[in-house]
Image 1 (cartoon, protein in one colour):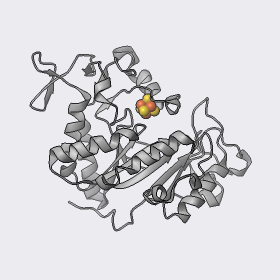
Image 2 (tube, protein in one colour):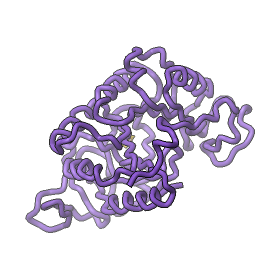
Image 3 (cartoon, helix red, strand yellow):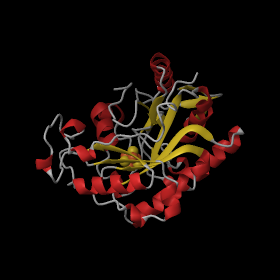
Image 4 (tube, protein in one colour):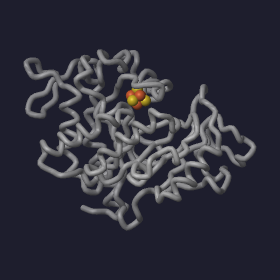
Length: 311
Ligand code: SF4
């Protein structure tokens, strides 16, 4: 388990801010929203909605520096999931609320310094996105995993950041989008994602929580061949929707045939074929040792050599 993180397909998570706005049915059971409410709802109220505050996470760089130290010790690059408590690609122009600290005070910014000082500019999501992209070059031993429900914004953001910073791409970024099944919306989202191909190292799809099948034959060949990685998993929690293990198997088989690395994350709290699971450790069925052997696949889109530490 990494710093602040128990997500199986990454090593660590780091957040620049907490809070978001719902963006379609995939946000129905947003775990980040529930967690934020549980952790600090009394102090800052809801962080979800276009006019609600976002909570700035001052320690994001410390988390990255900690991940670098671990990379050095293990001689292995570390993956960092950025903003698992928000969406890095939320449209800053649509957020009108303040950015606050842990005490609920409004934060301002001046020359990249962030404080409650009056007279400075209000701190916005866009400042933090700029600061994040400016930092990427400082961390060659980290792989930044960006997962968004707004893939229609990724090309615009990556292009403008690359232009601003005078670079052609971001070689330590993996960019992904979340889907729940391969319906028309998901197809359009994956197509949008692939428009950003030239700006990042890897493209991936997180098919989780899966609520219906993801038959990859529904994607055009060109779109499919642009993908490097697919994560699959059923929903967890009390109200988890049913997860059919056959969906996972079908997607895994089709992805492997298309040379896409597969990471089967969890069977979720409500798997259909319960009798095929021989061992249960935890409620989300994430321990692969109890799964049907054929589904025990957890690959990454790069080799062990490519994971080797770089200073
Ligand atoms: S985009 Fe992600 S963080 Fe934002 S509301 Fe939806 S599920 Fe939650």
